[in-house]
Length: 204
Image 1: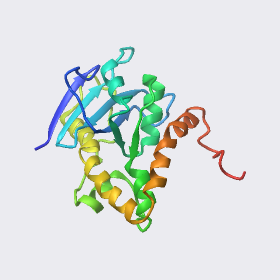
Image 2 (image 1 turned 60 degrees about the vertical axis):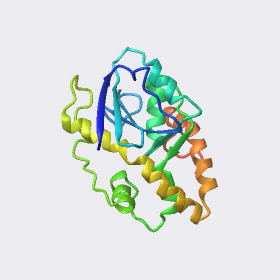
Image 3 (image 1 turned 30 degrees about the vertical axis):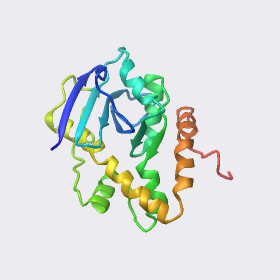
């Protein structure tokens, strides 16, 4: 049974994650510099999602401690954006990181789409609604539908990682996936320096 817990300002001290934690963020938009971080979702892989509302100007030491704990793997979908946004707004670099979108692109080359909704349906047979994606995440009080949407973004990432790890190993691409995840810290910094386009690794 799914359990959703909303926290204001920070993650309580007595909530701990061991081994790994699923992570996602909600923002006011997709501009890394302009649009503020509003929510950080955390999933334990056992059906519980903790939603941390970020209060402007307020520090969140417990959340930062978790995000930088090298003994806890952080599982994202499209980690590139989330890692950069957390670094920009909270001032900490998330590590270590696993990205289900990158993993899918490496091992599911037959698939035309690699969004979270697609992965949940293709690999887990779960239909996930994205109706609240563009809602007002900066609102002081989040609706029940917003909380459910936010929770869905982290509730399935542990299962997806397990499926994707098997595919990566089957296709001989597990090691290169790990190297891609390690590079995400640098990729996030490049994005924040506006080196998103043109790609500095391209010929032109």
